[in-house]
Amino acid sequence: MVVVLELLPLLLLLPLALVVVIPIFHRRGRLPPSPIAIPIIGHFHLLGPLLHSSLRDLSLRWGPFFSLRLGYVPCVVVSSPELAREFLKTNELSFSSRIDSATIDRLTYGSSMAFAPVEAYWKFIRKLTMNELLGNSPVRGLASLRTRELCHFLRILADKAERGEAANISGELQQLTYAVIFQMVCGSAAAATSGMDRGRVEEARTVVREVTKIFGEFNLSDYVWFPKRLDLQGFRKRTEEIFRRFDTLIEAVLCEREELRRMRKGEEEEEGVKGTDFLDILLDHLEDQKDENVPFTRLHVKGLIIDLFTAGTDTTAATTEWILSELINNPRVLQKAREEIDQVVGKTRLVNESDGPNLPYMQAIIKEVLRLHPVSPVITRKCVKECKVGKYIIPVGTILFVNNWAISRDPKYWESPLAFRPERFLQDHKEGSKIGIDIKGQHYELLPFGSGRKMCPGMNLAQQMLPTVAAAIIQCFDLNIADSLGHGSILSMEEGSGLVIPRLHQLVCVPVARHSLFTTILEPES
Ligand code: HEM
Ligand SMILES: *[C@@H]1O[C@H](CO)[C@@H](O)[C@H](O)[C@H]1NC(C)=O
Ligand SMILES: *[C@@H]1O[C@H](CO)[C@@H](O)[C@H](O)[C@H]1NC(C)=O
Ligand SMILES: *[C@@H]1O[C@H](CO)[C@@H](O)[C@H](O)[C@H]1NC(C)=O
Image 1 (cartoon, protein in one colour):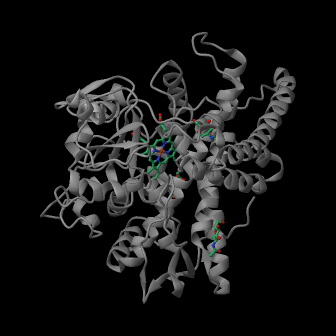
Image 2 (spheres, helix red, strand yellow; image 1 turned 30 degrees about the vertical axis):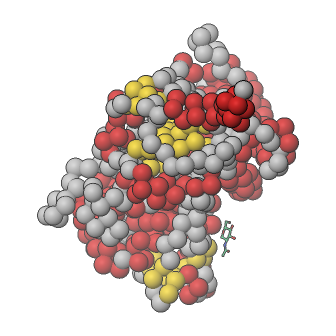
């Protein structure tokens, strides 16, 4: 009797103990070690606004392979090239999907390429996009569109230079990339008649920035059981508002094009008029439905467009911002880059995309910027098939974070990792040389575009635009930073937060023309 009474508290505790202890034992031997978790929220409290930086700090204590629990969702965090290879290559098919959420689903019409797993639809749309828009040959085919927009951008700087005013470089770079991606994806039907509708591009920019912003936030209800229906963070309301604005915009674009196609069809019989841009190709597929196994609807068209807008614009603009910032802070590198441009291009014409391959130093600068400032610093995937890595078993549903930002700043793999030194990628650099290291997802110490099948399809385009835009700016202008941005002449390099990591402080400079500008820039727009 006495014994039973003494045991009573223990007996009462037993169910509780089982609930707490069993999952711990259960998890041990499955997932790698992890910090102590707090009930319900797990490790959310360890993550600051800069995910890549929080994860790096944790990896200094827990090593290159540890696990976290965000609410009830298990995560593994990887911070070494060997492990990145193990996950993104050896176990590629297990991690060929991304996180999803009600917000992402709604805003991509449930029809995204980026968030789709590697299955029939993804294969179809990825191939179509590469063949018709982002592969080498379609990208080259649209070079003149980009040249036109680059000249428009340079003309704005020239105007500021003439008046001695400061230019909002961050803002102008965004407008440049949105104008380019918008026209590459949706064509410029309006441009043929009335000049491109910049108002519409501007609307696209404001809406798409809201989309990327909300994608970058955690909807706690996706991770924690309790707030489910309450919408505590106001996510649902915001999502619906953004959805409505984007849908209105894109419907206008689609309807306009469909109208144009109907008119064209009438004329075609007589004259053989045919549209051939990307939007036309998408609409052709919509009409034909060639492959019965892969349904293709209007929602898929809209989902793809929002994908390309969100993935292609801010990434390119933010990277260009970082290139200019590093050049401003490293006058020696800037000087060398200009000498190369003067030697290869000369002083009588504007640099263009065909010059890219002849500017190895500029290419090395781009790599060095992508190393120090990968604008998607953490590659995030979701496990769709249980797999074994070392002695651990990774269950379906686990989120994988590959911290490429941490890897490319790790002194184990990079000599003086925080120094901006493009020479490390060039032949003439002797020690710690990284010749032959490229950014195409095969060298796991440098993964700015990710790796494997889900790797960035926009890499070609970025590799055309980044060196050309940067080279054109430094060919034409000196950029004098506005005082508030830096101490003396050193620009602050703090990072902003979000899905894409831009500068924390907008880049605002007074451009000063270096020589009389080229006629291609000064000619009024046709
Ligand atoms: C500097 C510029 C860019 C950077 C640093 C960048 C980086 C990335 C990264 C890291 C990923 C994830 C890769 C992975 O999971 O392995 C990605 C995916 C993607 N990017 Fe980019 N990107 C850039 C430009 C672009 C451009 C210009 C476009 C298109 C116009 C684009 C379209 C996409 C798409 C659609 C995906 C999802 C692909 C899929 O899941 O199948 N990106 N990008
Ligand atoms: C620069 O432009 C961006 C985007 O248009 C805007 O959000 C920002 O407020 C501008 N910054 C300055 C200093 O004008
Ligand atoms: C946030 O997540 C919860 C649970 O998944 C979902 O019910 C809610 O709709 C989400 N909010 C939005 C706007 O996505
Ligand atoms: C770049 O400029 C050169 C020399 O003017 C020209 O031959 C070439 O066609 C241009 N390339 C592009 C892509 O505009």
